[in-house]
Length: 238
Length: 119
Image (cartoon, rainbow over the protein chains, first blue to last red):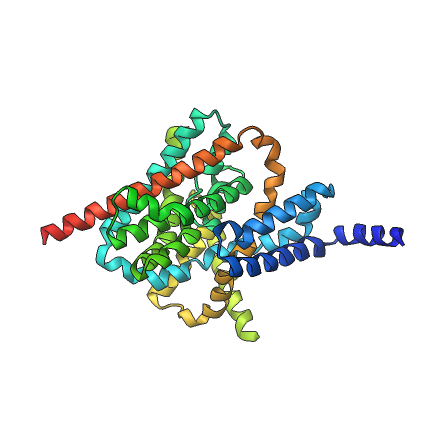
């Protein structure tokens, strides 16, 4: 009996169904949990990541075994990046009224973020590969992965940093705005969306309609601005 | 069903055109970002109607984090690289998030106020 089970398990792990199945299962469980609790720590991506990593580590299954199925999911990262044009198109009218303040704010904030990351990375003696991977950590995940690959970083480190950034923004974004006396609703929304993408935006939406809409607009623009800023600043500062 | 396949086909085509542009232009902008810009351009010029990609886009956007799972799990291959650096990593991520929010918010607020006082 045990032999049958163990050969079944071996057969399963050798198939792409394993990686795809475990991803679907953990994502589904994570979605249910997130719906119930609403806690930014329990978002489906964090949960899937932690559970799958724990599973691979404790049963000594290699990442390559997982990724036999995982790479089918990763294929959709391309289309997932392209369709970010849709929310940007839907919100681009919001830019009309305050185009210059919003664009200048996003540009200054994104640049300050990159410079601070490189400065602190050097302070802590992180190696170049890790610090490069952190550069696009404030933007939305698909764009962040693209930038990380472009710069020669490790996209998995980038994704982890992006998720942690999102959690930080969702928990502390409004507090930071209060601390720095940012009271204008447009400015609050743009600040949260630029610093902590979609996860932060869930919090901005709770603050109010203007804050939520501006945060949503800022996600796409901050992503594009960082695409252009990151290689320039990385070249200057490395 | 066919409608969704066509919508996904259009999205794939934009992604492919972006990659094509990237390889032929030799600019440091990733292909899928170029695809996104192309799609935005098509939508803004009316060459493409939102309804031609809307259903599939909304479905994918709703479940976007699912597509990042394998990339996130890939962190397991970087554990040795990050050994002893976790505290630094968390510190850098949290502090730089504050910096981005503060600089963005302050800049935007100051410029909006200045423009209002000019009027």
